[in-house]
Length: 232
Image (spheres, rainbow, N blue to C red):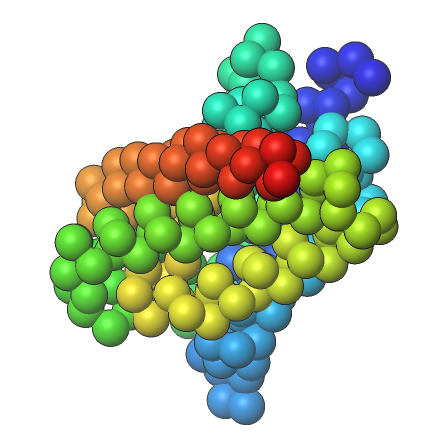
């Protein structure tokens, strides 16, 4: 499959993730009788689950720069494709945030608010400080990549990877929405931050650094575990 087709699939998949996940938070997360944290968590999981099954056979279904980095470190992804994938993922996230803004702003009296942007300190949903946010994002992304690497291992049951990955992302959101509004995905964080500006852009660095560190660590740890298993 050509890099242009794989990058296009990554654009669409990331677009769907941000539109579905952030869209659920912005449009339905806080309204009366809305879906609340649990519903938003499920929405993020469902976007990845459906996206992986729809597009994974084209691009691998990363939809996340941290996932691409983790797979690269684990030697599951070629380095020459990393930059095109990240560009496509960020572009998809920004496009989704733009569509979401157009929809959300169609309501009379609309105010942008946090627009599903990630933050720490006073911009954390429950005022978690920078160290807590940093640890949370590193650990959650580490575990996300462990699930991805394990579920897509050649020895894993076939056909269930998308389900495991989607459920893992749901669980991650159930844990960490109160802390950072959950990133574990630099592209997902970048799209809304560009519209919120100000504090969201000033804090965006953490939502690039922490997920990439967590993913890279998993890219080292999982192959070491798998290698030990093969020897056994």
